[in-house]
Structures are given as structure tokens and as C-alpha cells.
Image (tube, rainbow, N blue to C red; front, top):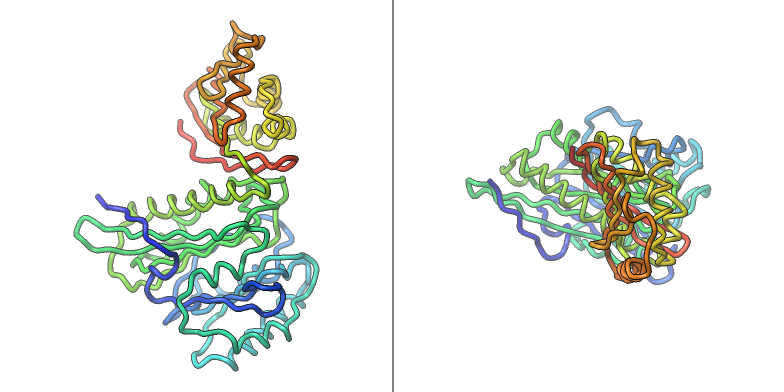
Length: 396
């Protein structure tokens, strides 16, 4: 057994790390350059975009040997350093050489992570000139999360304390950015998760992968997959406490919570909608149907226009290729039945009731395929002509 307690603020809750941000001149009046560093070199697990054109920071990371340790992450916004070739990687190496002139500690396999415009090399002189502004003893979570924000409308950070049955405790906290150009292959996002738990490296790799599949790897806004998507987990091991089940639980909670923040922050979003597909043949088919709904332009425009036309839902399910039968299909908008074999036409009463549901800030569209028992839910929000969805856990 274990107890999970939400904490105020963000990364400040985890011992062994320092973090901050400064304005280097790329943003008018906000931080655009940040750092995360540790007392000692620490283990890092990471998941990256599936885009074949991986940005220079990811390519730089992948040049390190497997299971390397690091003590420094440099973060920037406004420039993705993507599609810049080997020169982009060399720019990162140059920046770390310049950074070493401004620190009193040795950099150990430093990492860089970037977000912003694709296709332009970093202004290394401008970035290097800002290194002297850093307070490397800072523990300001707000400052570092602001440094990675682009189109985000709010800061995304969470923190929890986990108390184990024997009374020992560890903390986990995270910051994240992302609001647009998001697809189910991670999002256009950067996420950094810090913990002081005494977690083995093998568990870090395993549990981060599982958590990402249930959250960041299932987020979609506009169908595009970014070049820079990154999720990192680092541990200082300042606490002796660790329990694998407890850590898996809190990691899933944090990544899911941050993913839903991405949904709510979808540019112009005003509604959060759950698509529930149940009664599918198996888990993969339930997931396929739900993702088809979340990516359908017809469904997106229906949500934006508050149009209860169930035909768009049924058509999308059929087009997804899953096993289905129009005589078994049942569709509800919240508790309003909009379609089953005996009610194929919306009468005025049900149409008005369904329309009223679609005017609410959040609601559920539930589709029972009536084939078997597999279930999957997808969460989305309206964006006018854009759309965000997060595909959550499935059950079978």
C-alpha cells in the first residue's frame, strides 16, 4: 500500500536538482533559455519522436553511449534546431564548451532540448552571451517551465509525494510544454520528470515507456508529428525509498495529467470530449476505432459546430476497419441515446437533447460496438478547425 499526496509548486519538491531560466533576447519579455542540473551525474531515461527527421538535440543525445549519466540539461525555445544537419549538432557542442566557461562544476555528458521554429541554426553567440545570467543554484520551477513555453497559454507542472507502507517517502515532479502540432507519436512537447526515488535504471526505462504509451504517445491535435518531441525521466536518488508498483502508479498519473493539460491547452480549445468505444473485438480494435474518431475531420467539425449528426460517428467507425455491425451499434451522447437498431432517425426531442449535450464544456460520446468486451477511451477538445485528442487506457 502507498499514499499519494499532491504538492504545491513543481520541481522544487525534488531534492538534488537545480533549475532556472533567463531571457536571452529571443522572446520579448519572457524566459527563453533554461537549465536543469544535478548535484551528481544521474541516470536519465528518454523517449523521443518517431519522426525520421529528428532534431539536432535528439541526435546529439543519441550519440552518447547507452545508459550514460548526465548532470546538465540546457533548454531553449523559439528555435527547434531541427533540419539543420550535422551543423546543428556541432552548434550544441560549441554551446557546451562556452557554458563550461561560466560554471564552477564539470559538465558530464550534457544534454540539450529545444523547441520552436524548424530549419534555422541556433544563434549560438546570443545564447552563449546569456549564460552569465544563469543562477546555477536556483530552484525556480516557474522560471524553467516558462523558458520552454511557445504557444502554451499556461504553465504545465505537477508534483506529488509518495508515502510507502513503511513510512518512507519519495517525490516526483514534472514540467511540460505543448499546445499545437500534436500527433499520437508523442506530442510537439517537451517533458522533464524529476524524482528522488531510489529507482533502478531498468525500471526507469520500463516504466517510462509504459507511461508514455498511455499518455503522450496517444495525443493528437492536427495530425502532425514534430521533430523534437522529448520526454525525460531523471533521478537524484536522494531518497532511499522506492516501490515499483507505487512508482508506476505515480508516473502514469503524472504523464496522464500533463497530457490532459495539453488537451485543455489546445490552441483555442473550449470543450473537452470523451470518446468511449466499448464492446470491441479486442483492445487493438477498440483503440483503432477511438483514434479514428479523434482524427476524423468530419467528427472534428461536428464537435466544433455542435452538430449531433450520429452518421459522422458511425461512418468513421466503419471506415476504421474494425469489426462492427449496424444492428449492434449503440451511440450515446452522455445519457442521450442518439442511435441504435430501433432508433435510426433522430426525432426532434432526442436531437434537441443531444444538441444540448454538445453545448456543454465537457461530455462523452459512447459507442458500443456490441461485438465483445474490449474498451478504449479517447479525450479531445474543440479547436474550431483544429482538434486535440488524447487516447487513454483501454481495457479488455
